[in-house]
Length: 107
Image 1: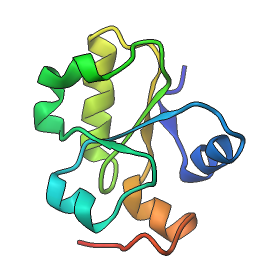
Image 2: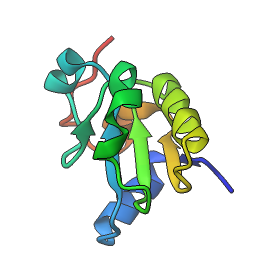
Image 3: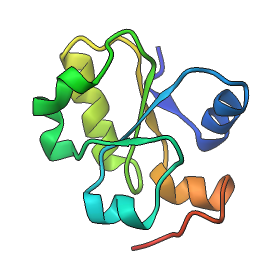
Image 4: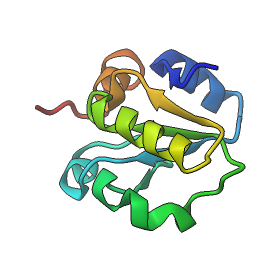
């Protein structure tokens, strides 16, 4: 099973009306600058104490700035028994480049 999803695959899934829980694991100041509409912010450092906010039966797509922190989040969630989690390859940065240029890019 693949634990990654591309920006195009995610966009297609969202456009099809698929139920996907978008988990943003960045920090609040990053989230205030740029986000994918409908996402929920749970910073990576607070994820272990926030598992009760997640539905184990949902498909969860985690993202961060470029995909490193969200890869860590996916690994952690898999260890915690969440069966259907994916990392957005390239994070919100690639989302801005390939899907929605109205989402600001930042360093």
